[in-house]
Amino acid sequence: MLHTTRLSQNYKKAVPNFSARPTVPALIDSTTGGVVNDSSRDIMFELGGSWQAYFDKKVPDVYPDDLKSEIDAMNTRIITDITSVPGKISDVDSQAEYEMLFNQYFDRLERLDERLADKRFLMGDHITLSDFWLVVSLIRFDVVFYSKSKLNKKRLDDFPNLWRYAKECYQIPAFKQNTDFTAIKQHFFQVSDEPVTSIDRVIPGGPDLSTWAD
Image (cartoon, rainbow, N blue to C red; front, top):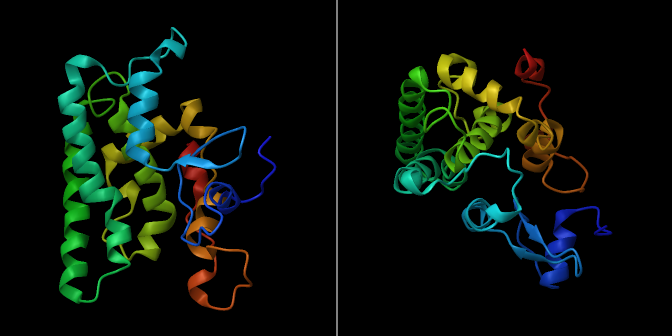
């Protein structure tokens, strides 16, 4: 429908001289093929809060009024301490800065693992926007950031509650049908279609992804 093969082409349909790295998610105009919004937070809040009239009646309210403040606070913690850390690590220029981000990342994972000891999802029995943020970050941690960003204190399956939670969320069709582990690794390691000429762009063979289906 979009007549493109790479996301960068959709960015260039909106900004012809676009030369930065394309990022996901990206909201694309199906008429022009151009990217109109690539802010994860804006897209998530817009779809979760303003498009409820288009939801199937069986779909839970992922941004309920009585939990909005708690969801907002949780989202901020996840984005600050987990989602944004790999990108910040790639720009560090000192051991101390790396260690600060490393500890920040795993301290938050430990706290979330404790939180999920008696909860199915972050806010209780029903999935919310906070779970969308966390699950995507956990998938990328296990597949990419453990090795690429040197976030290697523990693997995801070393956190019993987070691992149970991540696998359960992955079985939800909205997550499973939109998770392509190979594409994720290609995006972060190969970056472009240019020939691979260095080890940093070689796609790693692991981890064993069959464990997500156990």
